[in-house]
Length: 194
Image 1 (cartoon, rainbow, N blue to C red):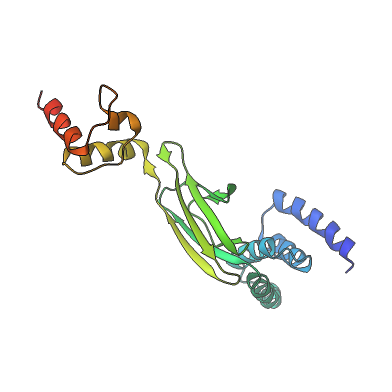
Image 2 (cartoon, rainbow, N blue to C red; image 1 turned 90 degrees about the vertical axis):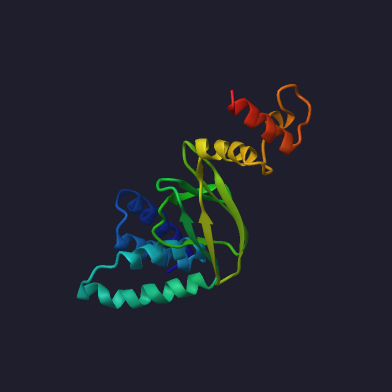
């Protein structure tokens, strides 16, 4: 097939995918992207197709081709296995939204350093930067904390007499001058005792 025909097929298949995200459309789209050397996208679609492959004899022959093309594309890119502790959190790679947690499969990325984030309303964002090699896999675990839990952690730690990472206002105390962690804890205990 001529390069122009692959470009036209890709556009048509992309429209079909948006209407009906089925294994066969993913298979055709993945094959087309592989032919166009768009390996990251090819791997994503072929992986989806294989995860949803039906148990039909008619489709069995094509499954081998899908596996071969996935292996070919996967060798050109990196893969991330992302676990985000908050279901429904939006997962982003290098600032671009990928999908919501829990993720169904691997996320295929260009090799190199990648920044992975999880964001969910009411939670502090969690992020991790990882290096992934071409043909390699990196595991990423993100645990967004509820905002109330995140804000309570420094106060609880200070109350126990430990040091805490707090914002400038809390570190300065009531009058705006810097206060040592031990003194903050002492003030906290005195205030709680009232």
